[in-house]
Amino acid sequence: MQLADLPSRRTEAWKWSDLRQAMADDQAMLAGSGKVAAAGPIASLAELMGDAFGPAELVIEKSGEVFETQQSEGDAGRVGRVVARAGTQSVLVERLGVTSSGLRRILAAFTEIDVGAGATLTRVVVQDNATPPGQANDAIVLNEVSVRLGAGATYRQFVLGEGARLARIETTVFAEGEGAAVELNGVYLAGGKRHVDLTSRVDHKVPGVTTRQLMRGAARKGGRGVFQGKFLVERAAQKTDAEMRHNALLMEEGAEVFAKPELEIYADDVQCAHGNTAGQLNEDAIFYLRQRGIPDVEARAMITRAFLIEALPDWLENGLRGEIEGRIDLWLGTSP
Image (cartoon, rainbow, N blue to C red):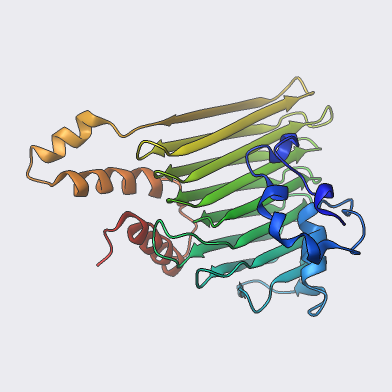
């Protein structure tokens, strides 16, 4: 695999997240590693980086279990597989940590997930960036899952992305069983000198699938947020009910948000919709709060916080919800 084999801004799915440019200083590590695998560049890099660790498989046999993983510079690559047996209910928590600055690290993970008939798998991804706001960070964080759903299965996911030099968290869901349900929620926080990309695709293959997606983001000067979402409804997927929403705030001059919501529909008996907005804070709302004695900075933080936490789903466990709200408060500068 050579640097030229990696996607660049000329690659449609990566046009706002130029992986080739981000890895320009790391091309020596790619030499002799073969071509990009059919599964894509993230899978290829995960295999390359994770040779010392090997693939890992998690088989979920009973309900009520919570599994946690943490990926940092000590575990730079991971290729894995998760199997949730039929009828089980479980939670998978993944933490992607960037713990220091001034050191380039490539964290890459690719996971295949099978959710059996009637099973429910909840996945929570927390990608944090511990470097001070505005300080350069050379980490490249790549995380991708490919999910297959059986009949009546439910896949629920929430992602918090704080970005890095380049951070991309990608999700592909194949709804292969009738009556399956998909929920994809997320929040991205693109601070100065941070790039965060949340990309997803849901392929509706059979009748009666329900999909809901709500993404919220905020970007500061020098930060870039990217949302790409696609719902594919195949001809056989009648009675699909799918809704996608993405909303973002541009906090300051020089902030960037790029969004590409897509619907590709070949069935004729469906309910599908998408919505996308990107703009600044409502100055009337800020004025209202300031009239009540709340300082300008605090008023802006309050409104932004309320906007972002709307994307936190009700099914988030209280401890995880508190952790994620704490990360948002820290980013806004309002944590105690």
